[in-house]
Image (cartoon, rainbow, N blue to C red; front, side, top):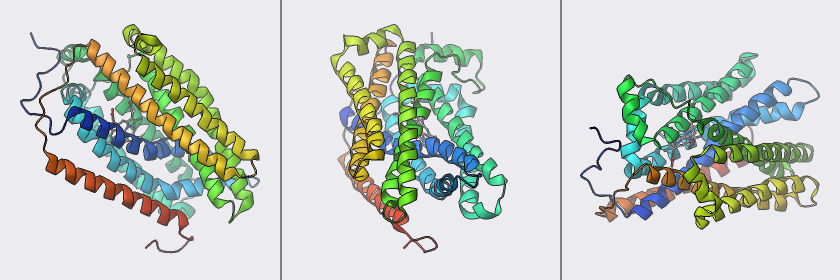
Length: 371
Ligand code: HEM
């Protein structure tokens, strides 16, 4: 009989499991921020483009323009940090992750082609926006749709890998690599939760943009704080229901862990909910505050901390579900500190360069060359 979970590779972990786990969460967090701005920002930008066609909505047209200018950089950051997360995911969960990637092989590989199309569409928009006419709206929706499909393909793999017992049967039934995990009742609420979270983060980013612009263009700045606050709060409120739906769809034993069965997991979930609500609430306070910058800063800090806790909850769901399936993590460790040190140095340098690049782009005057 074929075992449901493949045997571990005869290779030791290159660093202690806790360190690899921490780096997976850190790099996934770094992936998540630009990914949210691509996934949510492309939807908000496409809607703003359609609404901004009316002459009485010039700020929405301006926002749509800012979104397309930022998109190529955001897609690059998403991909770069995604690759880093993939490294650690493979080391810790390769046995189940690769098995599910094989079952949905063509879908998984299609991400590369989809990304190339998104890149072309985003660059075309950023460089030829003025001369594209009606095609600009089509391209803006194309970027949003493809980002949504890529997220759904990732969601399929992240949920399919949690069911190792079913993978052998699925592969035996059809080994062409064309299956998805669409019948899983967790998939839809999980995807919805991801997309709504991405829209909320994009709303926060628009509020931050508003605060940055207040001095240069007060009317646009105030509008952007209001618009961003509305988007962030509306998406977060709806997301409470998507989150509850995701929880309710979890296997009973996993759900019970969050209902007091595991106090740490329950505490992280509750703190995550409180912090994200606090974050969204403070964007609303920023609309009428004398110093909106302070409120938006509190909002950003609370929302980012809330997202970090939500990532712990997502990780706990994976851990609990795989434990139930009988998955044993590899516990043979032979640390290779040299490569680990090189990784740290390069990671710090990469984060520094991304921060520098973002600042340079944000402060560049229109029409000037970024150094
Ligand atoms: C526009 C492009 C992308 C979008 C919209 C996107 C979106 C997402 C989403 C929504 C998830 C969470 C899925 C879930 O848990 O249900 C995810 C996870 C992940 N993504 Fe991306 N992604 C993109 C590109 C990439 C690329 C190019 C890579 C790497 C080559 C990557 C690496 C990862 C990894 C490793 C995870 C899982 C991390 C973990 O489970 O700990 N992503 N992505």
